[in-house]
Length: 160
Image 1 (tube, helix red, strand yellow):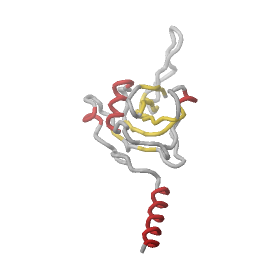
Image 2 (cartoon, rainbow, N blue to C red; image 1 turned 180 degrees about the vertical axis):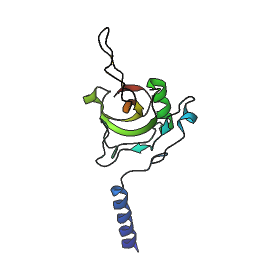
Image 3 (cartoon, one colour; image 1 turned 90 degrees about the horizontal axis):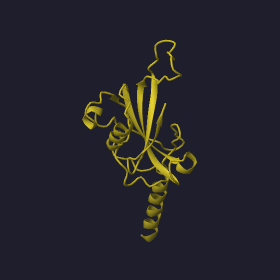
Image 4 (cartoon, helix red, strand yellow; image 1 turned 135 degrees about the vertical axis):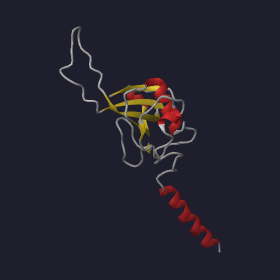
């Protein structure tokens, strides 16, 4: 009987170690519609993503092996992205959770968790010297990303 328990425990332990990580609330769903999270937002919400395995998105990499407890929810991340750096012309919005080497990127210290709030369908900001005029109509299919700290909601960086 004892050897069966030991074998079962061993199999369960191996399965737990091999799992890709716990599924976070809201992961893989489109979440709450944007206008219900932040009044005035009419962007269509895309699927919430947690980077796992070899997945990357910009500077963000997989969260595998990191403690994902105590994080803001995807909706809270969207709200923080809106408050800190909203792109009003966005047609879509997607919230992505990933990790990054904060020292390398000068986003803090250590390997930390961050949310990227990505606004799709935005027009590029065209600037130039005095008297500059764009050559023609802008192509409004850009993506504007806002990175926030996944624990505090603090604004980190943004851009296209």
